[in-house]
Amino acid sequence: MRIKSTKALVILASSIFPLWNAAIAQQNNLLPDYPNSYEIIRDIVDMPDGREMGSGNAIDVDSDGNIWVFERCGGNNGACLESDVDPVLEFSPEGELLSSFGSGMFVWPHGIIVDDDDNLWLIDAGVVDGEKGNQIFKFSQEGELLLELGQPGIRGDGPGQFNEPADLAIGPDGTLYIVDGHINPDSNRRIVHLTAEGEFIEAWGEKGYGPLQFEGPHAIAVDSRGRIYLGDRTNNRLQVLSPTGELIAIWTHWGRPSGIRILNDTLYAVDSESRSAVGEYGYNPGWHRGIYVGTLDGTITDFIPDPSPSGGTSFPEGISVDDNGVIWGASVGDQEVMKFVKR
Image 1 (spheres, rainbow, N blue to C red):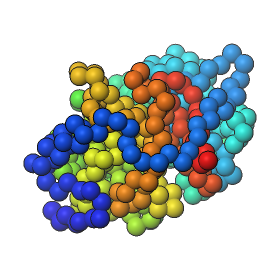
Image 2 (cartoon, helix red, strand yellow):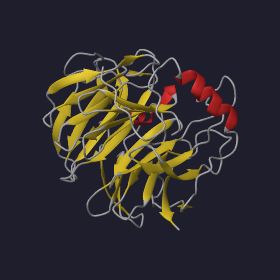
Image 3 (cartoon, helix red, strand yellow):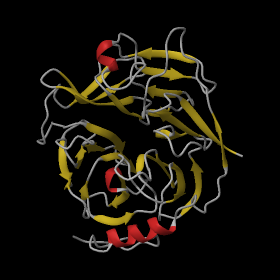
């Protein structure tokens, strides 16, 4: 395996990673010493009468500046199986609901990407075994199905199969990079590389704690040079890979990444889970929930702290960034859409 150095803080051997992380955790008991150039604006979308926004981590922005949210049918786990509401929602930048679709089609919405042609890629991480879910879909904005990946309700690790896919990114050449796996211990732990038409190219990764091993992988982004940024969430780190899957860096100073986006060579990563209570899911002592903003060499330039860091998940789990640099977020715990605007 060829490993490249970077200017950022990088751990190049799994044997020293735990010691380094423990040292930082002991020292960093206060908020990170980074500026916060953003203000939070909440309650910004209007839902139809009688309908509530569901949990969600899936949000993106199209070329017109409209906001697309793939939410969990007014609830969270299992809600879409018992509901006839549309989980795919389009809002204007001012929060007006413009369109919707998708009733009865999905199990557990978990990701949305708007591509350069304004098509929507939707990730359904839920599975009704043998029946439904565990797939990725490409739709037009009018709700026309253009491409279907995976086998409905079938778990697997072969070509054309997924086991709880979590996120997707599109490379500069149009190929697809899919995070295949979630927190279920029996789900996959890998990145799957496909052509733009969904044909299998290769896959990397396995369950574990070392380099190119993943635990609870949750988010992915690809920069203009094709480098891959993986939110290896349960391992409390971000792994950077070459376009062909070689390890470039492991960064633990970006918290516990749940969502990642890249725009104009700026990296955005949200930590929605870090907690300091021993035994709780998300245990990551010394780290604080919030959004990290920085450069592609790993330098952090801004940190937007969660205003309620001691409770359950309240901050966005998924984020997107529009052409004006506004960060949009979708929250699981508070079930809302919020935005972060530069002061």
